[in-house]
Length: 256
Image 1 (cartoon, rainbow, N blue to C red):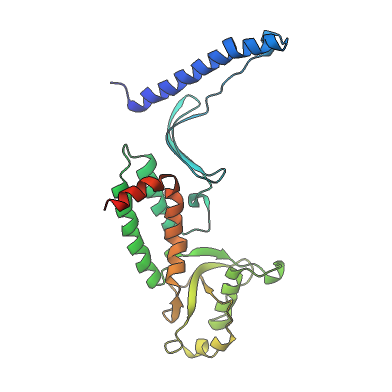
Image 2: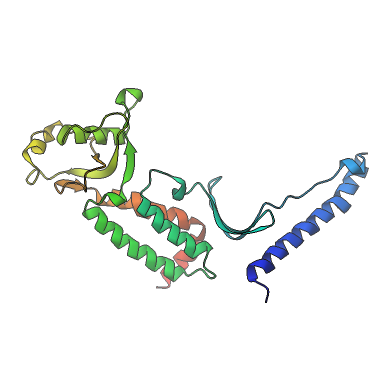
C-alpha cells in the first residue's frame, strides 16, 4: 500500500518535472528563437528543495511554518519555522511548549480539529492565569541587565531591574539576568518595612519589576498586572500563531 505522504511527494515532483520540461523544451525554445539566443545557452534547472505536507503562511514577510516531509529528495519529518515565538529566546519556555503543541495540531495531525485547538487554548488560558496569580516565573520574559548609561533611553526592563535593587536588595549589575513581571503597584499594608519605606521613590515609569534568577517567585505584596502578563505570555502568542486559520476558528467558535 502506498503511503499517503509518498503519493503526494511523487505528485509534487512529477508536476515539477512537467514544468521543467515545458520551460526547457517549449517556452524557452521559443524565447531563444525570438531573441536570437543559442538554444544551449537557454536552460532552466528547477532545484527541488522541500516538499511540505502542510504549511502556515502569515501576513508578515519571512514568517511561516512548514511541516517538511521531503528535503532534496530525502524523506523528512521536521518543521521549518521562521519569525514565530518559538525562535525567540526571551519568551517563556512554557509558552513556547504550549505553542508547539498547537503547531502540532495544525501541521502534524492528519485532520485539523478546531474544537480541539479551542479546548486546548481555553485549558492553557486557565493554567496561565493560575501561574500569573501565583507569581510563577514560568510565565515571565527573561531580561538581561545592561549598564543604563549604554542606552539613549533606558528601556522598561532595565527600569524594572533598578526597581528591584531599590526596593529589595542590590542584585542587578551589568551581565545579570532576571524575570520580568508587569505590575500595577505594591500593597503597602502587606509589604515589609524595607519596601514600604521606599515606595515613595516609585514613579509612573515603574510598571514592571525584574526579579533575580534565584528568587523562587514574585513576593505576594506586588500587585500583578494580570491582563498584561496574560497578553504577553499567552493571548498574543496563540493569536499570532492562529492568524492563517482564524477565519475557520471564528466559524467554529460561532457555532458553539
